[in-house]
Amino acid sequence: MSEINRAVKGTNDILPDKSYKYRFVENKMLETAELFGFKEIRVPVFEHTEVFSRNVGEDTDVVQKEMYTFEDKGGRSITLRPELTAGVVRSVIERGVINGALPAKVCYIGGCYRYEKPQAGRLREFHQFGVECFGAANPAADAEIIALARQILVTLGVKGISLKINSIGCEHCRKNYVAALKSYFEEYKDTLCGTCNGRLNRNPLRILDCKSPICSEIAAKAPLITDYLCDDCKAHFAAVKESLTAQGVMFDVDPHIVRGLDYYNRTVFEFVSGDIGAQSTVCGGGRYDGLVAKMGGNDTPALGFAIGIERLMMLLENTEAPFPEDKKCVLYVAAMGDKAQIKAGGVCAALRDDGIAAQCDLCGRGLKAQLKYADKIGAAYTTVLGDNELADGKVTVKDMKTGETYVCNINDISDKITDLSLKSALHSLEESVLTNG
Ligand code: ATP
Ligand code: MG
Image 1 (cartoon, rainbow, N blue to C red):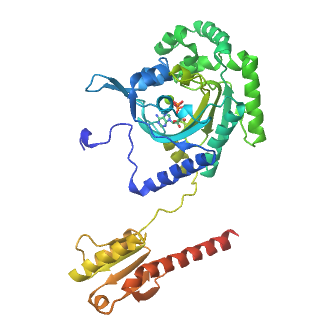
Image 2 (image 1 turned 30 degrees about the vertical axis):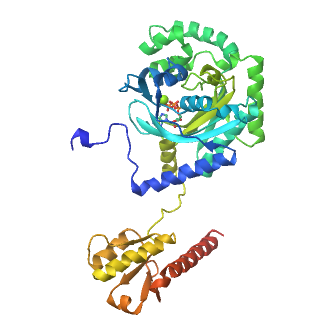
Image 3 (image 1 turned 180 degrees about the horizontal axis):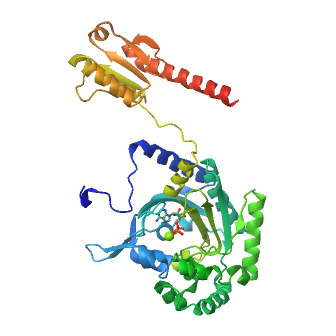
């Protein structure tokens, strides 16, 4: 197949046999966030480039290496969002969301674009579910959003995941830390990768997040931010830990977590899995108290997190987490002859009006082929319309699982199917209660 007929490198198609799983997961995430008061926000897939370059940070990998940036026909520099936080902050300032009741809590689902080396769990187009909370400086807010991320993962049946938290301090305590980092990395100046060499003077914190094995090895022994926290940041971090413990949320403090984006301060956290290989971080987040003011809004503390949906799906599939079954065709109306075919269309239309998934032949196939198709698509019930059924107005409905048949009037078919479906659902429920206790 020629290149142009193939999907672009690093992109994924979610096919009909799997899309229901994504929809289930996404609905669960939105519903769980709603329990905590988060409402969905939808923002554009692209923004002015500066929204990301200035705020995600000029020295981050995302901005230096990964952005899809282009000039539009009006000569503007546009970037496909590599993450959603910066665009959401732009939106809540511009549209006045943060001038209303605070804290303002929003959540989102959307595609993100990063020019990275594609591998398992690392795509060029991927999707994030995330939340942002504006106007809450209290450590209770940090604990609440961490608890929300955990509840989402637990609700979906994710297993084998651990929570790592850290505090990266505020602008005051970070000054001393950055100086200490600079003098530490200075000694390895000639060994650091080219990008990190450039970061040494501008933003040595970013070296801690470099993916190159040499830089990571050097960074592993660098001074730790936790030794440089000011009293306020220490107290804040202690209170976050205390609240998490009170809510029964288990965590490990990992002083090496700094997060890859510039806007974070104080609490940062990651949920990490041992089950999906090298790309093990499923969720990352933290506080970003300075970003709203930096982007032109009133000084508003804020925090949030994002879950990588593809990585989450890998985790759910690897651990065989339970998914509800996909919705199938309820009744397939097979037909013999032109008149019956027209009637089958009418029967399906009436069923669909009542909210019942119904299908009939669209290909001019014979009866045997129609029933074979009904079997392939997993229809729960079938019925056959022919001259006899049209003449006496009665049809036979067959339960494809049990083989049992039921006779009813054509006009009562919707009631009959509803009745049979209810009984069958009740029966499965009883069976599962009997087997599971
Ligand atoms: P990583 O360290 O794995 O590159 P990151 O720190 O760049 O992750 P964030 O910017 O915090 O990631 O994004 C939040 C989440 O989005 C990640 O924890 C991950 O689950 C997901 N994610 C990030 N980049 C990708 C990608 N290229 N492909 C798939 N998922 C991704
Ligand atoms: Mg990354």
